[in-house]
Length: 112
Image (cartoon, rainbow, N blue to C red; front, side):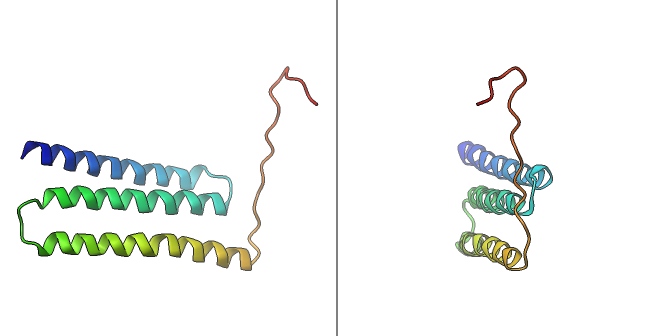
């Protein structure tokens, strides 16, 4: 039973890590489209790992709890990328521009 708890906490911790990295990515990315990408990818992965950790936590309980967790996971797996795509498509239709940042060459490097 101890390895169930260890595996559960591994999934819960890694899911939390992905969600925190996504939150940091929201602040550090340069434009709307990069922020949306960072949020939707890490949101889906983080929530999926947290739900997987919760599945291991409910080990010997009734079948209804794992069934509900699986339905929530399936719902998130379908709706999160779809919502991210819809938000980006709506932003592009309303004229939100992509901000390209130039990468400056290193000091002392050769320019071609």
